[in-house]
Image (cartoon, rainbow, N blue to C red):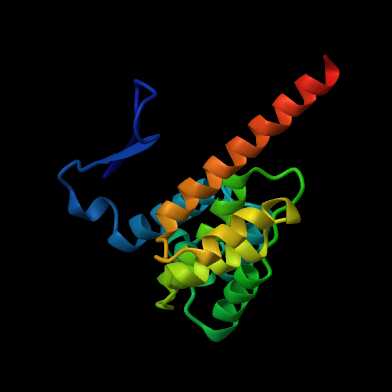
Length: 180
């Protein structure tokens, strides 16, 4: 087998071409080379925590590195699940955070819990999001809680975004009226 560079610059940086002679390269050497290349490409895309995990547990082994990352980020172990539940139950919207970013944080924790085969109902997710909203959303929270029919999370997100847009619109009107 021979290694060639892609002349167009697109696609894989190196490709393998079979030259017809099976004795030129063993599968093991090829597999080790691929793993080292995969590792080198992977570490360029990782944050500091992920990089530390991979370097410590799977240096120069792309296949093992992906397994380590998958186990860490999609793990089903008790510590991981407790950590995700803690993240979800302690959710708080920060002052400068948009509703969209806040909802994405809640959905990220929920998605990870569902991937760990935990059951998270829309009612629980809505309750956690409502709990973390600031006092400015108190009226909205009361309306949602007092509804006759329970909302699904998709409807809740739409209602929350609409409330934020209306509240911001009211503030803009109030500021404009006060300055004129």
